[in-house]
Length: 232
Image 1 (cartoon, rainbow, N blue to C red):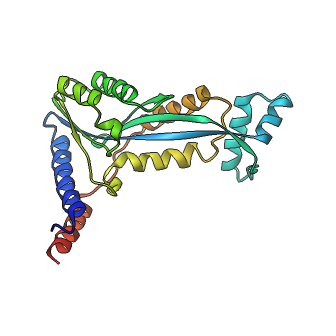
Image 2 (image 1 turned 90 degrees about the vertical axis):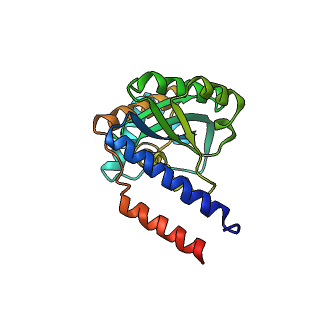
């Protein structure tokens, strides 16, 4: 067992997460959120700048480019582009309903993360007396300021899966959908428009929100493999 500390920790965390998920589905005053962070790098390609110089406004250019992809029109992409800075997206995926809570920020520090936690605290109904939060092992998630905030908000309980177990966090699956649907062309004139597009996608998702089918059977298979490996 000592040779597989990550495996042991992963099995224990998965079992705990499944228990909390079941409690959330039963409506025991418990909710389970998978929380993550995505840094979106904004690029600006030469042909985009040229289109604007020719009199096309930024929003029309971007809309036509995105719609063109769905019509099968090739997208003009060249190797010449300029990095315009990153925008940070904090998101929480409600494993019970599939609803996403999100916030954008220019920086990624404990201050911005706490602001996102404050948003969750305001928006999650008070009858949810315990909020279990699954999130990765970033230093930002474990800093002194965050720990002090948690001490003042006891209904929030953090769970940190071990390294290489990001598959346990369903918000990563949602980030993948976001990247395919909205960020295949990360060509935005400024951070404000990028933030607008990200939050627009969150709103559209929440109109038809659905949980991901992380079935008990599939989780049981993972647990069984863990037990076999530990017994070997």
